[in-house]
Image (cartoon, rainbow, N blue to C red; front, top):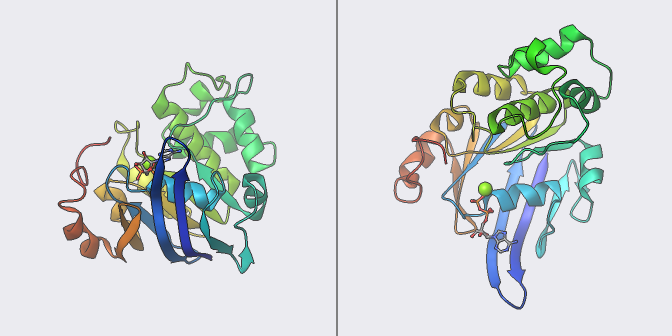
Length: 236
Ligand SMILES: Nc1ncnc2c1ncn2[C@@H]1O[C@H](COP(=O)(O)OP(=O)(O)O)[C@@H](O)[C@H]1O
Ligand SMILES: [Mg+2]
């Protein structure tokens, strides 16, 4: 379980002074799917980066399974079982797709296991197993490889920032199946997509750095009409 208590984040340097997240309070239970939605710039990525420890809050605490992790570094949080899929996936020079999946699962996978992982994310294994992880892979391919990596990590908490971006040609059904298959973990997904909101146990609506409401999709959707024009429509 993750408890977020009075979490705030702001920028305060010579050029800018800006409150980005204001007093966010949330409880995220085990085995549930949470979808964070809201307009561009509302603070969604900031919130998930704070949970992962990529940035540090100005105020407030983050408690994970009873332990205060607010001052822990990214790798320390990763060791406790928190994983993060980037909005823009990263490439690793010199590494092949199968190496990355071996690293993520902490063991050597045989061809059959790699094949299963890659086909779960809609990639034909024989074409990708030995592909170098470089910028010759498209954004959508990298995004799917990253999803496969999240699948084999088997973390307690999985954070996805706009997993649908760049993979619009791929079926949403497969993407939502992936989230459903992670049902033993706590899943935190930043998304604008109605199809992803549909699988949420709880939707969290952010606007201007504040939680407007948490609830079911049917409770949240009417509130997004003016705030979030893209919801239910095309990707960013
Ligand atoms: N390091 C930063 N410096 C200045 N502004 C930032 C920084 N990080 C985020 N912001 C601003 O904070 C707001 C929230 O950003 P973000 O969390 O990325 O929004 P979202 O993911 O909801 O689109 C945006 O207005 C963004 O421009
Ligand atoms: Mg974002």
